[in-house]
Length: 518
Ligand code: ME8
Image (cartoon, rainbow, N blue to C red; front, side):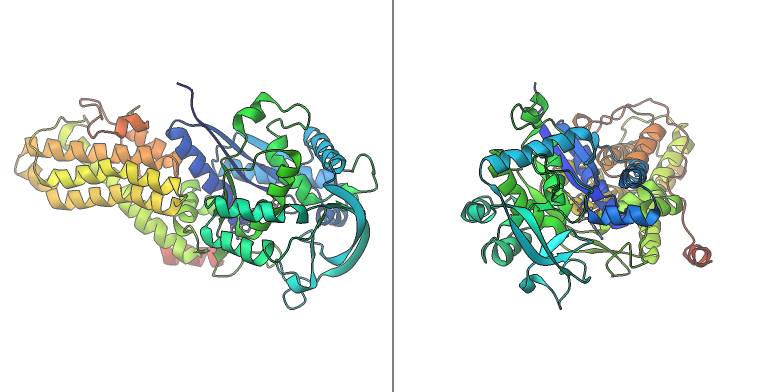
């Protein structure tokens, strides 16, 4: 049977500097969604990459005394290394300085010019250099850039404009008739009421004030506006071509999900749809503007000096602990917070206690009571049913949460299996059964625990892949797909378990924080 396709993308990160844990959260979130879709049998295409043009990068390179290309090569490498370190399973890492992308952007610009959607005019406005954005007076907050709070400057230049105004009614109609297009819903209302309905102005889509960009090929003193360049990455890299789109493009487009942060929803739900309409290309199915990760309840900023980096955290806590924290701590619609204190608490309570201890205790008991051989079911009791129904019911719950992009809830539902299993140990007290020599009952208890852990590990894989694989290794099982957990009881009786090795060693909080402060 032909697999259904699923195309998921992240934003492409600016190569202005090393990405912080907030930027990294996005790729981890996308990775969890992509992995879960693969587990469900989809033919997944997962794209990420870097956004490498613009005045800010030109300035940064100058400061560093290197060429912009050297600068972006460097930072793109740093970004890719962090994505890899965090064990993210993207299919393609794209860069806007790739020649193929650059050429296609030129063709796209020309096509829009030829069809009358781009015209030449004069631009005068308030410009925020770090954000590469022009603003109107009314959009400023306290006279400063509404996105980053920095000074704006008056800028005027001959420029090309895109006829955004032409698409206003169509956009309102589209967003209102496709209630799932923008997620979360509150963002949809914000876009409609604050940005689109008050009136769309034509958008300046070229610059002459700097040169680090893609030249407009028929008027090369202009470079293409960085957002027109950046947004098209979603189609150019799967083989979109204005004349002759590739089979890959026909297969994967429209994207099923653009995963981005809440600050750039405007670009993805106003500019991007209008650009696509101008090209006669279908719109992506959904844009999800995820909330932000704050540190100590403060916005993370590269220039604010409070940036925390994923690779540093991974060195301290391990990759899966970082993945767990960000996936679990940032709900669907509200910002999440990161502190070392909270991180250690979550690590100790959820990873070391609930999960690590459960696996360690269970496998140790199986070693002690059954020489490490998976026992068969002996005597059953009513109390088993509640455990089994929690475990077998988890898949539907997790799948539903994932369909609704409620990833924090999904991971919690997986942990519900581990919590319930710990409770089952308290309820059945296997050590008492051993003392009473009640072997047949003990067999059932240990089997049920091992099987519950296996089911939990299958579902855990999308979120904490490395931990999940360690559990499979300890259980010595290859039964890791969704079919194997549709019914309880697939774990093979008579197989020999491997030795238990601790998954997460407890952290001494006081000592850890003291060392960190040194
Ligand atoms: O915006 N928490 O790149 P970028 C969570 N190049 N997510 C955050 C965050 C935080 N504290 N801070 C930023 C860009 N992000 C453009 C995208 S796409 C065609 C072009 C998110 O490197 C941010 O919202 O500034 C964005 O989705 C991603 O990190 C990369 O941000």
